[in-house]
Amino acid sequence: MELLYEGKSKRIYGVNEREVFVEFKDDVTAFDGKKKASPEGKGKATAEISSLLFEYLSSKGIPTHYIGKGEGGFYAKKVRILPVEVVVRNVATGSIVKRLGLEKGKELTPPLVEYFYKSDELGDPLVCADHIVYFKWATEEELKKMKELSLRATELLKDVFASAGLKLVDIKYEFGYDPDGNLVLADEISPDTCRIWDENGRSLDKDVFRKDLGDIVEAYGEVLRRLRDVLGTPLKSRT
Ligand code: UDP
Image (tube, rainbow, N blue to C red; front, side, top):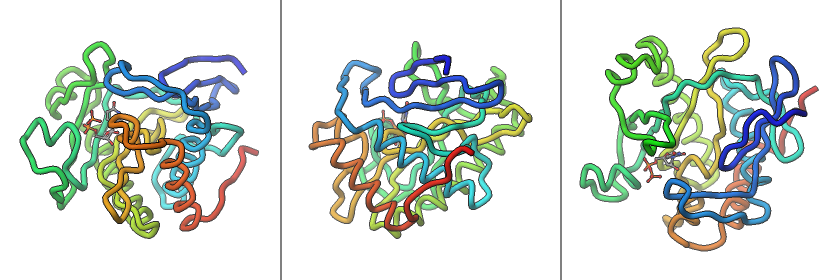
């Protein structure tokens, strides 16, 4: 397979005109790439968790790019990603706490939706809906669809995590157009892109790495084990 793109935590290979293979690396970065590590087994864990969660969301009617699991990653429809990240927050922590002076751990009910402009040079700045439409990063209809899908996906995932004794604190989504012109949920859904707390408020996500809270591979393994207990062992393969 031809390597099409290499990012901070994934490699994308072309399979054919319409499909890619998303391979997860062990690399983990934080603080705009200033902090880096490569813990063995982290890629496998994020690949498995993403596959499980995409498969679950697809089964519940959320359109996604996911096709099927492979070795160390998954097959997906080739998508043109829109440069907007949608963050849904159930609990205040991370950047919003600093930005708005909120108390960490404050429940956000109903969930709060925020948008960020995908730009490494600018450090993914927070933007509002008007910026997105004005600068044509997405149309008003696309934005409405992305918001609705993000809220629906979060509701579904929040329940799955709750059944696993875990709290889905916040989560980041990306969307793109598949080869048939459908707007689908894309990228990844893993502890690299969401925050998960256990019953004791212990972080089982990338904050383990960001804040040096312990062994990230062990934390992600715990999430995977618990999700498997709830969702069953995956997974459909590509063919
Ligand atoms: N997030 C992400 N990619 C980014 C920025 C944030 O996946 O480039 C996720 C992050 O892991 C968290 C949620 O989005 O689950 C909200 O992140 P926040 O805005 O609090 O930013 P952070 O504190 O991570 O800088």
